[in-house]
Length: 136
Image (cartoon, rainbow, N blue to C red; front, side, top):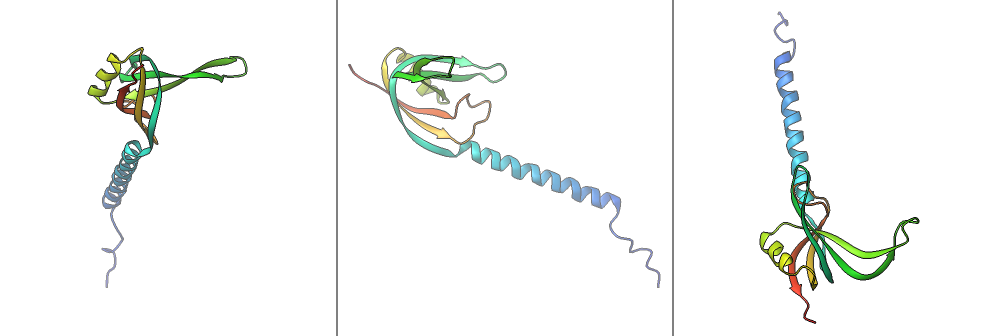
């Protein structure tokens, strides 16, 4: 009996299996990353004066805003006191238009906090879902 035909898998078949494992690994990692970026970590509301809405970014332009929640807080040791500002991002165009019309007014913002975000979503993990203008 001649066993020379049973030398094991060829280089080509081993290479194909290796590439398949790499592709499957990348797909699994991308799926986990997308899940982490869409998972809501917490949700709630914050109130204060809406002081800024802007479009920021070098490669990805995102909608960002700042809310002055009132009061002061301690900054770095060299900075001293600073305003109590809260930064957030906006994905929804309708919410963005509501925020633009409420700039400078006191508002109550509903938000969702995500565990992680992609660069094209926003600079913060906080995403505004609802805007309520507080009547004086």
